[in-house]
Structures are given as C-alpha cells and as structure tokens.
Amino acid sequence: MTSRQRNTGIIAFLAAFIIFILPFVFTFFMAVKSRQEAALFLFTWPSEWHFWSNLVEVVQARNYMLLLAYFNSTIITVGAVALLVIFGAMVGYVLQRRPSGWNKLIYAGVLMGLMVPPAVVPTIWVLQGLGLFKTIHGMILIQVAYGLAFSVLLYRSFIATIPRDLDEAAIIDGAKPWAIFFKVILPLLKPVTVTLILVQSIAIFNDFTNPLYYLPGRENVTVQLTLFNFQSQFQSQFNLLFMNILLVTIPPLIVFVIFNRQIVAGMTAGAVKG
Image: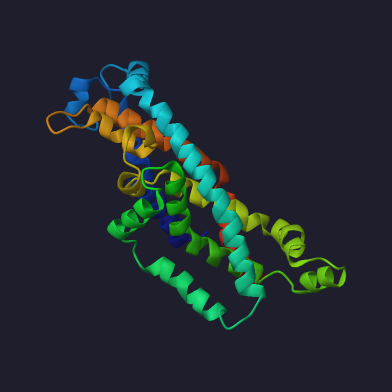
C-alpha cells in the first residue's frame, strides 16, 4: 500500500467517523443524561447515568405508545415489502422477457415514478375517495406505490442476466407462464430480493413524512412519529427525546450492519454478471 492510498484511507475513516459515529455517540450521551443536564445540549460525558430510568419512561410514555408504534411500523413494513417483492419481480420479468409495444410506455412510467415527486393533497383526496385514508392498509399501498419503480428497475436489471434458455427449456417441458416465473425465475432472484427486502425495510420503517401526512391519529402512530411525545411549544425533554431516537435507530442500524455485505452484493450482482 502506497502512502497516498494510506492517507486516503485515513481521510475516509475520519470522515466516516465524523459523519456517522460522532452523531450516534452524541445521541447516546444525551439519552442517558438527566433532564436538566440534557437541556444544556452539550457534547459532554454524563455526570449521572439515567439509562434505565429514561428507557422505562420512554416506553411507558402515553400509555406505552412506543410499543403500539413498533407494532404498526412492523405491519406496514412487512406488508409493503412483501407486495414490492411480488409486484416488482413480476413487472420486471414482463418488461425484460415479454417485448411488446406497451413496454416502452410502461418503462417510461416506471422512470417517471422515480423522477416525479409525490403530490400530497391529491393523494389524500384519492385515499379519502377509496376509504383508505387514516388506515394501515392504505399506508401499505402508499409505500408500495412510492417504492415500486425502484423495485421494478432493480429486478429488470437482474433478470436481464438470467439466460433465456431457462425459460425456453421450461416451455418445452410444458410449464405455464406462471410456473415459469414462480418455479424457475423467482428462485434465481434471491440475491436481489434480499437486497430489496433490506433496503426497503429500512426505508419504510424509518419513514417519517408519509405516515405524518397519510396516517394521522393516535391509534395509527408509527415509530418516527413518537418523537413528538417529548416536544411541545413550551418545553422539550431532550433526554427522553434522544432516548426515543436511540430506540428507533438501533433496529435498522443492526440490520444494516449485519447484512451490509448482502446489500452491496445484490445491488452490484446484475452489473457484475452483465
């Protein structure tokens, strides 16, 4: 390793430490401080550790709202990701394997889904017309609509690396189109499916704006919206607020750290094979 490469590595490590590690350390220190000490908003070592008391108070706040929020966020995440995997794989397979005059139009629509920002007021109007506003299943469909374009493009790129000979061999054996997709193609999509599940799960679980707009009501609270429990116009309990942030951040962080290699492998699998 040359000195230039070593210096570049050191700079990259320091940048990553400042951007990612220091904020997490600051959050942890704030979460274990007393209310008076946290109000000073200083990056200092806690004079007294209040980890357990702050943790219990956050969990018990507003009649255990955080537990309800975890349940709602889990239901939304699991439901939306399952639909994204099925529909994304199906549409990506059709776009790649079934050329027709409609494919270019559909592909343009998929690209528009990535580029055009969502409009909140018309979306609320549509949800109200369908009776899905303020409902968990309506929120699941919103997450599917917003994430489907990315899922389709990811699957379409990966399916392009799978030889068509497999489809033709299955057709010769008498397999129907549904059987070809579910029994031949879908099992081969495991790398990109794992990547999609991890990426979309973290994004949906951490989503703040969409539940804020489309899922009002205490019974529909999600984990990110519980941050409002400790902020008001006249006072803020920063120690409990940062403890809440810590509890909300740790599960996605653990998932990302454990499965980081699978995420990178799935995102680059199509390019490497191509």
